[in-house]
Image 1 (cartoon, rainbow, N blue to C red):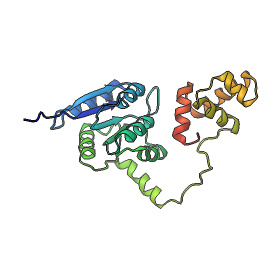
Image 2: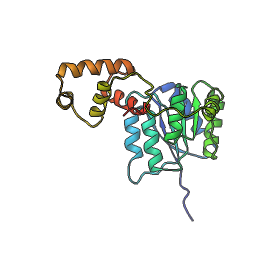
Image 3: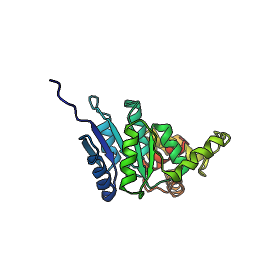
Image 4: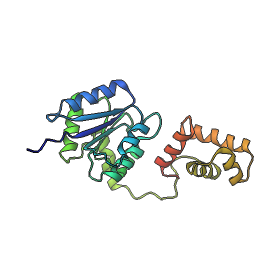
Length: 218
């Protein structure tokens, strides 16, 4: 007699209140699930990328404290092409919605829509549907009728030097190495990085590189 395999769900959510709500919604599903919850993206990323790991459902927030949820979606989609991925986030920007879908998300739910909506969205994404919060659905229709944007238009105002610095940092170079590569003083690099943090609204290098990748500028 074949032993029944329990499906595996991964939840990435840093807010303990929302994490508990989503956990309750998963446990309320008709089938029993083995749930792995992560308050930060890096732990979830390590778990997803384990060679022998199998995952049947991913629920992820976008605005995580360490890395963007978009990175997790990309990694999970690359490893599990048909994986049901549902975004549950407070971020409702059109650009993020599109990036999430392009990365591999199958649904996008805004936080605060109630436990019934959450449970319904999880069931839908598991059934192969594409649940999207009604307030976000209009973005998809707007995009469908919009002309394509020029690829050289940056959605944020980064100077060429700030953009160059982010590219060097994304390759793992230190500030001193960036200064040498760019032919400027270390103090100039520090000024560039402060301005870049302000423009990207981040507080550290990892967040800056991650957000720049989300914008598609590096």
